[in-house]
Amino acid sequence: MTYKLFLDDQCNNPDIPFRHPPEGFIPVKSSAEAIELIKSKGKLPEFLSFDHDLGGEDSAMVLIDWMIDNHYDEEIPDYQIHSANPVGALNIHAKMQSWLKSKSIFDMART
Image (cartoon, rainbow, N blue to C red):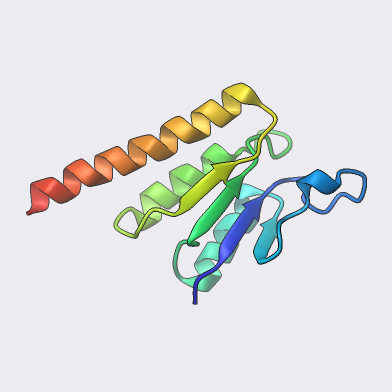
């Protein structure tokens, strides 16, 4: 079964409704929660919505690095970035695009 993941440390804050997950998304507040959810599902989500800054030292980059290390050969999820941090958003995009590109090169080399 496919699923969609919404990563945002303030995802259910009643004072910030625009940070609530869209219908059909599973909300998680940290990279650790996201990793545990992915482990429980046994595969990557079909779609990810990223916030960058997740409180303290946590960020979406922790999740992305973990996905690359543990699920490299799976289909890379479609994604959007809803982070208010412009530099963080660029970092997410660059890392996801790098994964896509490296996977494409790797797949071509295997054929």
